[in-house]
Structures are given as C-alpha cells and as structure tokens.
Amino acid sequence: AQGDATGAEIERSLSEKVIKDNRIKIKENIFVLDILTGHNICYGVLVFDNNTEKVMAYLTKSTILASGGAGQLYCNTTNPDIATGDGIALAYRGGAKVADLEFIQFHPTALYHQGSPKFLISEAVRGEGAILKNLKGEPFMSIYHPHAELAPRDIVARAIVDQMKKTKSNYVHLDATKIKHKFSKRFPNIHKKCLSLGINPEKEYIPIAPASHYTMGGIKTDIWGQTNLTNLYACGECSSTGVHGANRLASNSLLEGLVFGNRIAQKIKENKTYYSIKKLKELNLSYSLPREKYKDYHSVKLKQELQNLMWNKVGIIRNSSNLKQAKQKIKEWKLLIFKSKLETVEEFELANLIILADLVTNAALLREESRGAHYREDFPERDDINWKKHIIY
Ligand SMILES: Cc1cc2nc3c(=O)[nH]c(=O)nc-3n(C[C@H](O)[C@H](O)[C@H](O)COP(=O)(O)OP(=O)(O)OC[C@H]3O[C@@H](n4cnc5c(N)ncnc54)[C@H](O)[C@@H]3O)c2cc1C
Image (cartoon, rainbow, N blue to C red; front, side, top):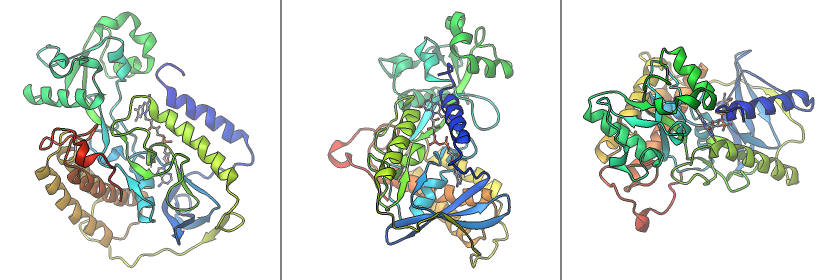
C-alpha cells in the first residue's frame, strides 16, 4: 500500500473508520500508568490525564494493550519517542507474563544522521540490488553469508558492526547507484528523506548503521491475544504471540497487528462472563506514592545513560561480562528511580524503560547460546538441547 508507507496507510484507513463510528469514544493525550488487577483478573487501567494532570481509573469489561515496542531502550533506534515499552512494563507490574524479551531486532540499515529516531532504509532497497560497501569502497557481505546483502537481518547487522570496527568508522555505505533508474519511483519516501539531508541516492552512497528496530518479546498471549490475566488482551508489538520466533521476518509485524487485533475483537464478542463492572465508569482518585523526590535525579540524562548502556552492553553483540556490568548498573538505577516521586510522562516512561532494561538484560544473560537476534559472542552457537525454550517472567 502506498509504496514504502504501508503502516501509514493502515493508520489512515483505521483512523478514518474509528472517527466515523460514533459508538467509539476517543480520548487523547492520556497516558496509561498501570493495569488494575485482582485475583488474576484485569478490571481496567489507571491513567494520567495530560490535559487535566489528574490520575483517573477507567474500569473496563475488556482491556486491550496495543502500546508498541521498546526501541527507545537504545540510543540508536528507528523507533519513535513513544516506543518506551510502557505496555509491557505495566502489564508485568500487574502480574501479566512477559516472554522472549532478550530478542531485540536490530535493523542493519538505518540512515546515519544526527538525531533520533534514525530513518530506516528498507531491506527492499537491498532486495532491489543495492550493495553494502565499507569506507574503502569494498563490498563485504559475501564474506559473511552466501546470500550476501540478502542474509538475515542479524547477520547483516553484525557484519556491518564488524566492518565499522575494522574501518574505525561509525557507519558503512549503501550503494544504490546501480538502481538509480527505479529508486525514486520504488522508494519515494526514502528518496525524499535522503535528498532532504543533502544525499542524492541516485548518485551518492547512503551512509548507514544498525539501529534497534523491533521488540520480538513482550506480553505473552495465546493465539487469540489473551494474556494470563482474565479480560486482558495484547496485540501488536507489545505482545509476544510467538509468531516472530527469535527473529521477525520483514513486514510481518503490521500483519500480526491486524490479525491479532481482529482475533481479539472476535474473542471479546464471544466472552459472556465479564468479571468487571457492567458499564464503563470514570472514577476520580487521589494517587500519591510515599516517595521522596531524589535530589540528583535528572530524567533526560538518566534516559540517555540507560540507552548508551543498553547499546554498548546489551546490544547487537553480547557477552557475559558486559551483561553483568549492565545488570549491576540497572539495579542501581532501579533503586534510584523507585525511591523517586514520578510526576511527568517522561518520568513514568523512564521507569518503564528501566524495568524493561532489567528484564531484557537478565534474559540475555540467562540465555547462554545464540539464536535469531540474540547473539552471545561467548556462546556463538545455537543450543537446541538446552535452550529450545522461552524465558518467561
Ligand atoms: C521505521 C519503521 C519501519 C517499519 N516498517 C515496517 C514494515 O514495512 N512492515 C512491518 O510489518 N512492520 C514495520 N515496522 C514495524 C511496525 O511498524 C511496528 O511493529 C508497528 O507499527 C507496531 O504497531 P503497534 O500498533 O503495536 O504500536 P505503535 O504503532 O507503536 O502504537 C502504539 C501506540 O500506543 C501509544 N502508547 C504507548 N504507551 C502508552 C501509554 N503508556 N499510554 C497511552 N498510550 C500509549 C503510543 O502513543 C502509540 O500511539 C516498522 C517500524 C519502524 C519503526
């Protein structure tokens, strides 16, 4: 749909339908803090209303989390600022099971430029014939895999990291000049973005580097989007339905979101036994945690430190020593942030990121093998005898 803007097209058509349907009440600028649970049942959500700066409870018959991934765990990411894994962290806090969090996919070819998120140069560009070259102008992918440019994402990402190390550079090049006759037509958005940064992909090489891209793990669900908590469902990138295994194939996540969103709707229609109240109500609550404001706490700085730590120690190539160092640091930050009073959306998001960083690091340390997107240089082989299983928290 719409060339290289499939997600935008899904959003456009869904939004159009939702706006037209007057049975659907839209609430914007509302941040979900927690799920309300008891006896393994989800009764709704606790939210922070950014418009009024009030904390409210929404009691619901069914709650569906569709809050996206956690790319913001890393300093280099293709994900938008909202991808702070809130849904996964708050579901975990509320007693929902989370699975496969060590499997974070790094996209090999994000445009190398200042700022975040990093602009994605789609796999399809290599599919059409673009070639990766190091800074000496040498193609290198055939050294790493017989499928060269078309090798799986994790292999291409590691090969690029290796070449970056060898050439002491922060990026490599993508040479799309051989497909210049079709580039602008086939990839109109990429073409436009490159031109806006002063790179003409029809004539020049595109500087690229890997970036975190997709959270394979998340809230564990069955194949109907049902979590282990009654009346709580999850779909899209925040969920772990299992369909992506350890290494999602390109283009499958939008499809997953559509399929499981639809399945959840069917399931909810069939569900006759609600444990929740009959009608949706809004309650005014007072919400104050008995915490001291920690004096040296600075959310922007701490978020950057966390993202750098995750990139350097829990990133594309992992090992026990780095993971243990990360675990220790995250433990300190966890203590720090949960002593502090959380007041803004940025602080709530940071707390969620720290919870997730802890879970991702623990799972990555535990899984002493390499599988899909999880690569341990100290355990480089896949180990089906000991590790053909999920890590669930
Ligand atoms: C650059 C890029 C290109 C991609 N290309 C493709 C592709 O070609 N094909 C493909 O299949 N996949 C692609 N993906 C992956 C795919 O886009 C995502 O997996 C998918 O959009 C996730 O959809 P989602 O609905 O689960 O979450 P999102 O689209 O991230 O939506 C989550 C929503 O939840 C809201 N939210 C989050 N936390 C809270 C909170 N605490 N309270 C209230 N609201 C909250 C957010 O504001 C957001 O509106 C791409 C991803 C990126 C980043």
